Image 1 (spheres, one colour):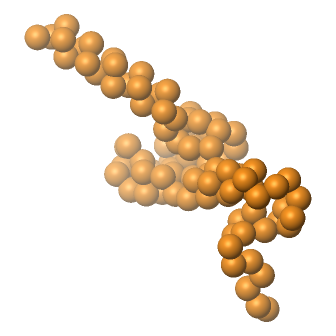
Image 2: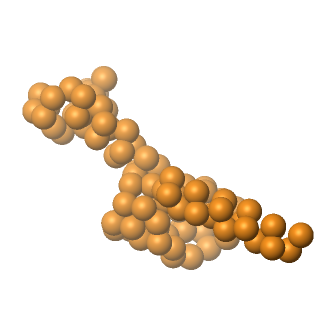
Length: 92
């Protein structure tokens, strides 16, 4: 069987519907959703999405909550760095 999509990739299922810019945006999200993410517990790239917001590591079996499309959202990263900075200033 021949390769069906060249540029479209994972969003080839939408064919010519919804417009090019929306398909490009959807492609970015769906690629990040499908890829394996880094596990903070075991240090391997084995975290995959189970369902919306639930991420599970295939190696160590840990399950963690995250974003709908990515494991670490930008808001969560900002909060984590703010907490770390406040904790360091409190100890110093």
